[in-house]
Structures are given as structure tokens and as C-alpha cells.
Image (cartoon, rainbow, N blue to C red):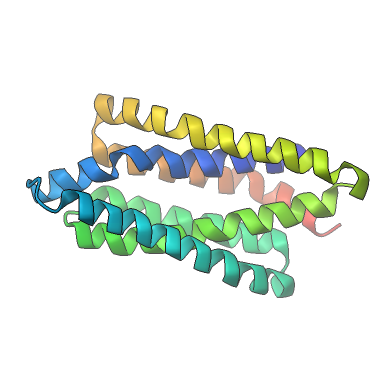
Length: 185
């Protein structure tokens, strides 16, 4: 349903944004040195963004064959699988590789979700629905870093990766049936 997709978009953006403010702190903690922390953090964040663009491109092509709902679930599951080990990473280079794959799968979520929204919305209402979707996405991007920073102070850096993993896992579990059913209509 459309409501489920909007919740999904918020959750994906929120889960991704939860980690953003702590990447430099995680890298600093791993290296225990200020020198090069900014560059290494920027590289990790940048590689995830590049992977996200690549993931969006590939998912757009693959989803035409397997369906938008299945492509979306594969991307959520992939994000889930690669987020979890980030909490155990001990070097910035391990984190870099894991962030690349997480970024790749997260990048594929939005094209699939937007395609499902387009399928479920009449042409005359698509502008309004995509406006709402964009606002909800921005809300997830805005609230995620605040929550991530607060949670990092309360429970530590690695726990933030587990929180994002949990959010994506719960999302995949509860949304999978609804999205697959609605995408087959």
C-alpha cells in the first residue's frame, strides 16, 4: 500500500542517516589519530555515495525484469546484511568495504520505492504523492543524524550500526508481504 511505502521511505532514510554523524568519530576511534581522520572519513562517506549511485542505476535496470517489489526487498536485505558487520569493523578499510556494499544496496531502494509509488498512484495525484514522499524522505534524513548522535553518546559507536541493522531488518520483515502483494497487482 502507499502508506506502507511512505513508512518504508522514512525508515530507509532514517536508518541510513543515523550513522552519518558518527563516521568520523568511528574512524578516529579506530585509528586513534587525528591525522588523516577527515580524509579517511570523507573517503568512506564518498565511496558509499558512489556505490549508491551505482546501485540505483543497476537496480533500475534489474527491477524491470524481476519487479520493483522484489528489487526493493533485495536491496533492503542487502543493506541489512552489510550494515550488521560494520559494528564489528576494527579498521577504517573494513568499514570502507562494508559501507560500499551498504551504499550500493541502499542506493537501489529509492528507485524501486518510487516506481512502486508511481504504480499505485493515479497520474493526476502523482505530483502530490511524490511531494509527500520527498518530505517524508527529508524528515528521515533530518531526524536520523540527531538520533544517531544521541544514541552514540548513550550506547557507543558500534551500537549505531546495530540500530540501523535492526531498523532495516524489521522493515524488511514487516513490509515484505505488503510490498510484494501490492507490486503484483
